[in-house]
Image (cartoon, rainbow, N blue to C red):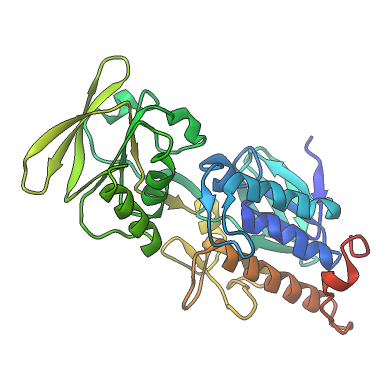
Length: 338
């Protein structure tokens, strides 16, 4: 028989925004129990690109995604969070006393006064290019994620895509792989201008090869990938010998069971009131990439802000009799609040 976990906040999603919720809730003496489909805390930052540098965390000119997760875990540790990992949030119901009961795919039950959705993109899978024999070379030279760039040291790498991930990894691997070729179907990139500028500079210096107005349409090899066929927009083709082909066309988000919980959803995101980050269902809040509101920016730093606001709103509503005063950690420290 599964034990029922009791908590203040049920946090669905243990990515960076979910982990920062631990800290913000802890400052207000609220306990968090986090649920995540992945087997480790950290979300995509831990599972997909732990070695990817992140440049827009305030105070850190550059921080590896895995390092950010480690620091967030340390930051929340004084508040003793609990976790259910490797299980998907399945069923959510409201109890007679107004609290919520969450049941996972494995039957684990968590009960809490409020729910914070911090599920990022939800359950996700990579968007795969349409190549007839793609599956034949998956994990035999075709990879959809880069967990450790050292795996590509001294190797020939072809990267497909024109977004942030494609450009960022092209820049990182330029100093690691023996050859890096970036292939994009257009001359216009969807990445940050600074990343595009860096990639163009690497191409001009001969450190990478950049091919635009083209895409990978074929793969060849024996027991492992040996080459890719590129089709240009003018329908001419060429073959490039390579050890790895990494298509980085983003992730296909799927909300999963969350979509059945009666929330106001548009385009795989949960609509919130951005003065509170509460959803259309009272008592359920959403922060990070899963939330949507006018002028939304899907940045980790914005998710941190959203988590802080949501926690303070929840506390004020739970304790209307108390005058809510923000406690600055620079004055109180953490030990007094934990």
